[in-house]
Length: 263
Image (cartoon, rainbow, N blue to C red; front, side, top):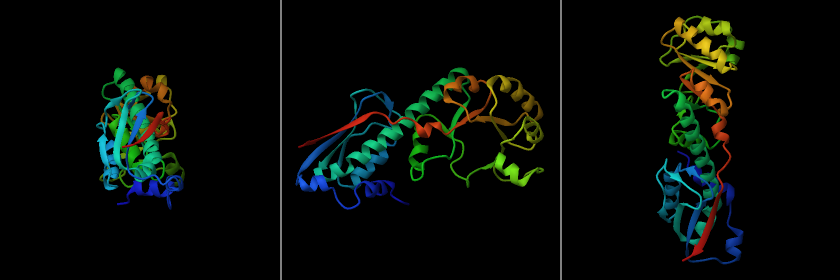
């Protein structure tokens, strides 16, 4: 499997670190990544493993899911200074992204569970190219789930499939069949055939009456909603089994800083 950290490093330092080499920085040092705000640790073990592969000693590395606060050291390593300088920016940027995803996922899950303990916050497959592995892991760390990891692991008949394939009868598949109807009429037409219905562009008030009607047609059906603002998660959580969102992948990066000192 591809080593993504090597890819990230090759982008940031394709040939050499011109500044460190010019200054002839040698010897051993310590790198500390410090948070300026509250957050949730994610993918710490992945970063630590990469540091160890580079011959560095990891001194501080909180467990995934642990909370941290302003001025906390969230990652600390020591070893050869030229190596620390190469990994500095990649490491800080990586943690600022995945920890932000985990933090906002936890907030969304907690808001949803206040009104419906059984509802799931699930993310789509609209991840950033080359970062899916860690974005999905960060969501799980924050208490969320994955709606779809890829085209290969689930069946979802979307509105675009309807536009091309037209109407269809019973579908035979080894996996759950999820359908995204274009209209209210299609929702009722395909509710008996589907394991899951994904409803978009309905208000919470509309779902309050629509969902019980759909369950009367198919008592075993799971119902999700997508395309909503997470500020409204509490309103939608009352009526559905899961909420699908891509917005968590676009969480504002946490404000982190890095200090490097010579030992």
